[in-house]
Length: 495
Ligand SMILES: C[S@@+](CC[C@H](N)C(=O)[O-])C[C@H]1O[C@@H](n2cnc3c(N)ncnc32)[C@H](O)[C@@H]1O
Image 1 (cartoon, protein in one colour):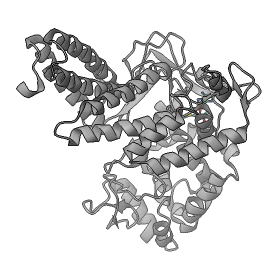
Image 2 (cartoon, helix red, strand yellow):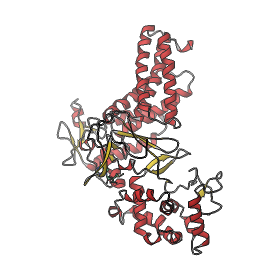
Image 3 (cartoon, helix red, strand yellow):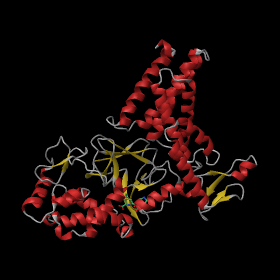
Image 4 (tube, protein in one colour):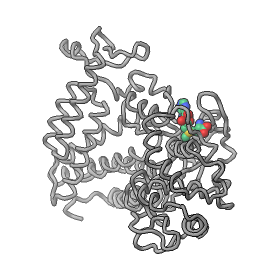
């Protein structure tokens, strides 16, 4: 597959979205839409990474003395870049201040962007980068503008290195701000070799519009290629969308991230629905209705922007909402890592917040992780651990069915966690003579279905990534269980 969209997609443009991608024919669930390599990978602000292998850098290239390198890489792999930097830095321009570049090492990423233009081999990629959305005027004189100016733009200009570049006449503060803006609006997070984050620029992938209930997902392989695939069937004429934000947040939080980082107000179906498609990920429990033994939720009315009960006249003022959220976050911070406190806090928060509220979901995910580790480290974990973990994973799966009904990585992981605990729990019950062999077989068959679904959800994960490794384990466990079901169930002790 090439770095371009195939004939099932076309690039369109309108006033709201700018350029976007639309399906020209039905794209079946699971079908790969695009496989693209990045035109450039950069370290995140504040990180100094080796320009060859992206590990943390501890030295500079011996030849150009500007490119950061790790201890295992002695020289800059990119001979062209190295020669340009060496020539500009040491020979032809004696007023170049390499010391400024080293002191303000975030300048190196911007320098790499400019080098795309200097090299004829990558000049086309530079052109594609400049076509991307920058929202320059919306950013002018904002906090991020001033930060970039202080830490990157002015130091790079003062270093004089650019004066040796072919495009020197075009280089000024605004031009450099535009490149930085393009990276902020369009780049994708990539897992670095140390499992931290770095950024890649994928010109085709970045054309996809955002949706909080997207129809396409992406997965990055060990060569940093990004695969985009349909997570559910995409209809002919439908906009192909991915997500620019964490989908396990509430509407106000997602919208704030999109407004501040991507400069648009999201009006997708999920954002426009006060119940978030019935998931209630931002809803509060109405205390007035609860007092009358009725179940109802306080949601944010989209027109009046007030928090109102869906059944009675009860409301919450924005300050009250902010206080509840802040206090809940503070309590979660203090309970972090302590399972008993988390369990107690969950019970407390569930009297105020909907059971799917994003803070409750966050709490449940942490609890499920702790239980997972407790089960793994225990020689004979007790039934309650399995039962509790299964319930927590089940809650997450049910929620994901609403907000991400197609294939999702997280659903694949949660289904696997649920299945693996279920298998162990059923074996324990069988050993304790709580069920007959036929019953065990029936339950294990249900687990097989969960494994199958988990495998389907994770099927696009590249083999070398942690998710790809997980997929292998899920497949192995699935095979073992299938054999067990075919050959007659065994108890844990028989194995
Ligand atoms: C990564 S770019 C997408 C490509 C861009 N439309 C272009 O023409 O280059 C992100 C920008 O696209 C626009 N955009 C993407 N999704 C949108 C949405 N759901 N609603 C409004 N604007 C959106 C916003 O301007 C956003 O900053």
